[in-house]
Image (spheres, helix red, strand yellow):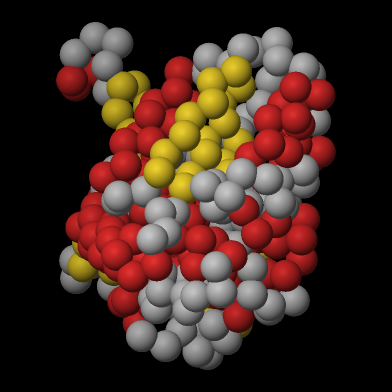
Length: 300
Ligand code: NAP
């Protein structure tokens, strides 16, 4: 058996197009333009690439995009002042502070200073609590993207056995909460989990968010299961030339695809969904703050 390959790139393009249509309608019918502000502190090369892509895709969706690039030694007070200004700026509906922040800045303090209704990353403690108690919240982008792919594949997720490998605040825990909300039976595995292979083999839905290249091999996968690979790992690729690298997931694609029913590739699976969901969250935030109905199928 060879798994269906879930085309996250195409799905994300569709999400962005749907967001773009809603944005055009908001403009023509209500004179509103959703606005996203991205704040980058320091010069981490990977973060710079992410921020550039976010800005580009925001503009392509017809939204207002603002980038604030601050020096690596920016003080906490100055960063908090900027966030306060953005919280009070009516043209901005979403605020994203690119993580990780330099060590001298308190990440929790900074994230919790964002107005919860503008917290399009869904990391504010209020949004975490709302999601955990099954209430309307801003949902973290990567797990939201995974949920969209799963709903598209399965329709209803009710009663399915889901195993999430990884318990981070940005992926594993919100993913587990979303799956629970969709009535899966959810188990979270992590570095101390015993018999993890056996546990994974019972999963109808297996989500890998570990950060260990190709850790989950085909013999961990239940035949026919849907496998969502969140991992993005760079490994040496000498076959491409000296010093070359390539991206792989947390799942060993070649062996898993012989067993799974459906599988996301890396790259081209979950990755593109993350920015698409950031745009969707900005649109949702704009609709909510203006008392307008939320776009269907773009929130959890
Ligand atoms: P993280 O904060 O490092 O968390 C990793 C989790 O994996 C932890 O809960 C850890 O357990 C668990 N783990 C580590 N080794 C394990 C092992 N041998 N067996 C079982 N569990 C193990 O990572 P993250 O931020 O969630 O990211 C996970 C992966 O997703 C990374 O590759 C990251 O690059 C990728 N990612 C992708 C996107 C995207 O847009 N596609 C977005 C975010 C992250 P403990 O808690 O016990 O240490």
